[in-house]
Length: 414
Ligand SMILES: NC(=O)c1ccc[n+]([C@@H]2O[C@H](COP(=O)([O-])OP(=O)(O)OC[C@H]3O[C@@H](n4cnc5c(N)ncnc54)[C@H](O)[C@@H]3O)[C@@H](O)[C@H]2O)c1
Image (cartoon, rainbow, N blue to C red; front, side, top):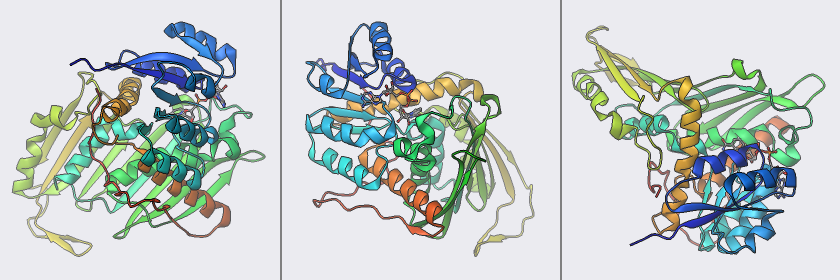
């Protein structure tokens, strides 16, 4: 049976819209149908590059024959209204993050997605990253204990963000927690397997300028603390990021905002040491994300230092274990040079939208994931503005629709 190819219409022909089109061009089951932007100097060259019509906005796209998927790559404050309009018109939606700039608007999109025949995916690229999926899997298999601490330190670049850029204006971007933080609130939700209950935060303004540094402490159920720091103050070459997970008897350190390299150290017993030693043979299985084409340089290496520690039991937070061996594992997607590759492939894999559109379950980064991330980001923003702890409140669904569990890898790209 031949699966009909779905036509994708892009709204917003700026830098990331062009990137998304390049990433998804050539995906089986999808073709680029048209592009739209009120700025002809952006729409026309992009349309010409892909050999499709250049229109002036969403309405024109919705009125165009053969557009089945609307990809939204406009500034954040425009996303919710456009996503709702596209879903109402029966289209599928590939929405750039954030899903919306307020929790209420994100909930409206979630509700519309629940009602609509169309499917919505939010471009939370980290959810399609093989390295994070592998760490999630190791937690699910019990090789790593559930993290009791999550830390993300993001020394991000502001080199391309001139003073007039919409990024700095919360009216357009939602502010740093919303515009950028959503990626990591969502990643924390996936890795910790829960949504935070409350958040405290601080925002720091550059002298005479906008807020360019924010930090939030989010408390997840079971006494798990997640810290998110974003500092847009660096030259490109000085960008650095560290995601750190404390599993008690083990630690995971992941580098790169698009994760490409992780080290894990763990104290284990004989049985666990043997399980860790099997991981290199499972490299392909652990690093498979449907729709993400492996680069070929991916590797998992494991070294077990036997009897590296005392044979007496070790104790932490009330748990006692006899763990004499120290494991050192590396999960490597090809390191920093592979970041552009991993980024593009993760965007491409978010087209698990196609699989869902064909009736194959929910995308991993669905509207609920988008709403949750925005709700945490808004609570963090309010916490920083008011200097008070904020509860994270997720608007309930109007109907008794089931609340999806945190997805590991359901859905797959065509
Ligand atoms: N997922 C990721 O990793 C990632 C990375 C970068 C950017 N983004 C997101 O992509 C989106 C776009 O970012 P960008 O850097 O490309 O911005 P940009 O400013 O380069 O481009 C935005 C484009 O949208 C157009 N536009 C504005 N309002 C419009 C409207 N009402 N209708 C149609 N077009 C309109 C503008 O003319 C412009 O061409 C943002 O939401 C951003 O957060 C996501």
